Length: 273
Image (cartoon, rainbow, N blue to C red):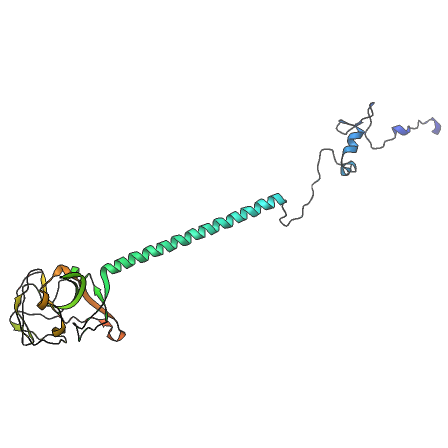
């Protein structure tokens, strides 16, 4: 009979809530007792959580992308970027300074090397006219006589023996062992007249014969009446020679290689410098 079926009491109806203990505390699914006060203390989001989610578990959620980071991390990241930029700037500055220093050192070395081989001079006076003029600039080969011997007709620059702080430019006329003489404006070398293969302004007075000593040179200016040379202050020691005139560079109309117009004399005595 229907009346004979025992109806469950309201308290026995399945409510889906945890059964309470005798003390009134509810038991969790894991069997851990929790008081009503504890339930009330939870965040509302927890109180309304889906009962199907086991306690102690979390729900995976999607986080929007776009590089969003907490403010503290963002500040650290910005500081790191700023530090990297400063390091890069420092490296670039050091590299620039190093390259500049290397360029300066290289330029100085090149200058010193060139200066040891070639030097420029400005002619002052008229003693070498008509071939060289006042204000003309020349380059002098300082290595010339380390590789070869002096020759008659060479135009050389040298320290003035009586005042080595002054430099002169003259032409070599006689080598060691040569006898040089001038008679009525004509140059005699070892007793024979020489047809000088370069323009020169002769002098009228005579110069007695003179033998060029070992290690010396006999030098004259091309403008004989207006030149201070061996006739005035004596023979030139070879150690005072700076170098051989090589290139005329200014003015432009006179620019070009220097013509030394070497000449020889078969009658010259054989004697090495």
